[in-house]
Image 1 (tube, rainbow, N blue to C red):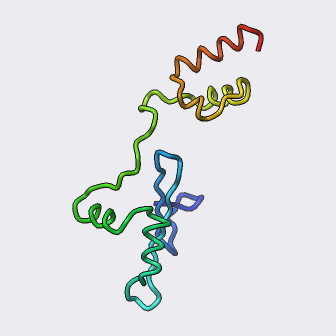
Image 2 (tube, one colour):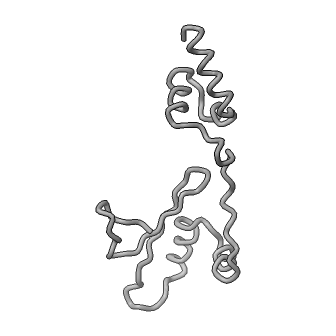
Image 3 (spheres, helix red, strand yellow):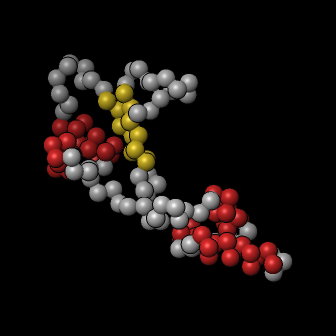
Length: 121
């Protein structure tokens, strides 16, 4: 659930965010239709496609059967991530791309920086 800057809950609409492994952040807000009926097909489709990024079948499988939609898995196993300052150095000093950095283990990344420093980078 999204909170205001002061840490309190947003009161006009309940808003949720979900960070995905690929870096996207999904955001949806629960509001009430003005005439207290249900959402129209167009709005419902927008919510599913643009905010939740699921099909109707995936949504109901989640609601009814507790089956989470496939959101992909993190590309780097937990515990193997590179520290942000190391990534910064790899980008700014060695001019590596995100793709190149993503292929490096922590040990390999540290060795690349050691080589850079010892060779008078």
